Image 1 (cartoon, protein in one colour):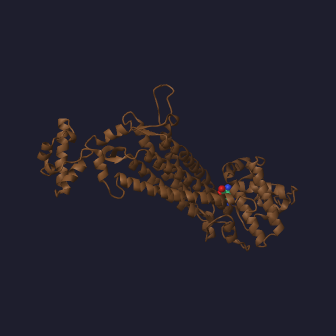
Image 2 (tube, protein in one colour):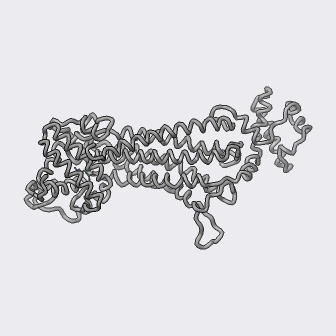
Image 3 (tube, helix red, strand yellow):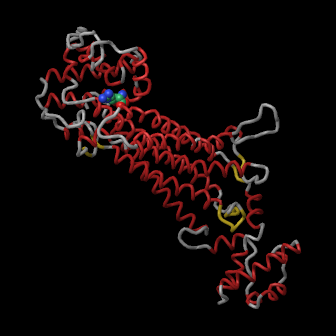
Length: 492
Ligand code: ARG
């Protein structure tokens, strides 16, 4: 292996160190360098950049485009760059411009001129698209991992309250009683859809772009299938122009993150409401709560407030990328460099949320008595009363009228349904002489015994299905991470 630092492959008359320096008569202005450079953020894809180059070098050697020993030298040198980076011995600089040229610069320092052969049949345009997909697909798997953990935490909480009942709301007005578990499991349904979305995004991301080269493909007899297999991609892009300029995969991920953030913000709002003195449904663990610097009595749900607020930046990143991509002519444009920071921020944000929400939820406690009292207040069993009439043949609209007037009468007299005697019920409607409407929430909840309803048996059955779906997703995550990790084993 050559170790000399040989710069003879630079052709710039100005001595510019830029990969594109040859055609320029002057060195770049320092302000251009600072403005143009992407090293500050594309360094996060350095592992993928190096591993992608290793696959490219192997393929160039296997196809006889470079000599086999050159391919070996490049591969060894690239692993060394990765080791040096991991040990903190190699860092990118602004002058490197981006991670791709930075890695190649270090490779040249290690291997000498042969490093100049690595970029054969390749362009930074397909290289950056490859790095970004390679990096994003792993982040998507990590998000899926977090979603599974969150779903399981909510199910664990639901299992601790199999019989707890709360008011269900519409318009934030008490509507009908539901099981607390049913309410929690509604969020698990959202998370399962999020998992599906993340996996769909992963599928569209997991496609090899390399070989598109700058825009038109390449005249070298490269083997794209070989590279795809080496890097664990499931498919290959079929149009070089589209390959280098498609950022749909970024948008898929940003949208998936936005929806996860939206679901977390809805749950957050409920946590905040339930933790208030007005509701008192929920008590967050002290270790997941904050206080006030001035009001000694305060206990705040800061995590939930941040969970509600984070959707702002998630939507912002999505809107930014939609705007960046709009109206861009084919193929690569430098605008596309703007695709990275937003996605990094969205992934960081979602992973941080999915780190803290599961333990916060699992350590929370419900005030079941307060919830049960609220569940029966404000005539939440009025629909059940109307249903008793309708089931005996009274048209539902008429039943609705009868019970509506009864509610108005009770409100005026300051009583509830439970205060009415058998005689009073019989006066309200002859059907009630035979059958009194339920006055306890348990009867009401148990009667909603259809698939998707809030009856305890149904809720338990649904929960079992959710466990299975989460477990299946967990297997997928473990499998994907295993494949991804294997790519970084030497001589893999
Ligand atoms: N830093 C660039 C990006 O993120 C890499 C691709 C540069 N390609 C080019 N033709 N200048 O998009």
